[in-house]
Length: 111
Image 1 (spheres, rainbow, N blue to C red):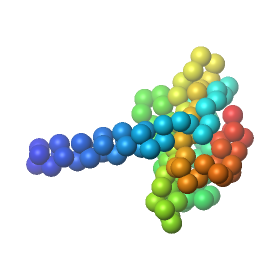
Image 2: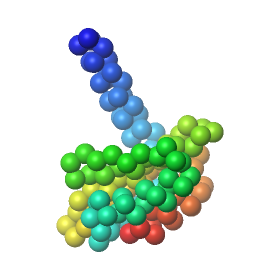
Image 3: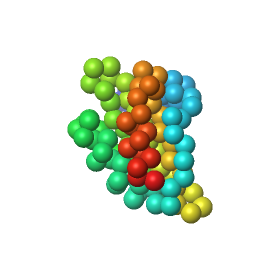
Image 4: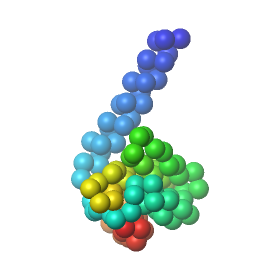
């Protein structure tokens, strides 16, 4: 059982690290006067209109919104972390989505 839990943990970590390598530069990196929670509460419903299975997770004070495209299974993320006067927002998109502006515009509208 411990071995299975260890393998699962490593698989999850590998998935997280490969996402960072696949999308090294954020498509959007801005600050917001809103708290990370308030920013996420604005963005999540907009992104979830396109992916009803999109997820919002919280790790401490950092909020992460994740959506996927059904036809490619690629995912986009928006991370909102505490900053001096609100939050720092980073949106990462799959390479094949970089030509689209809808995702970053939705994220920008919540700043």
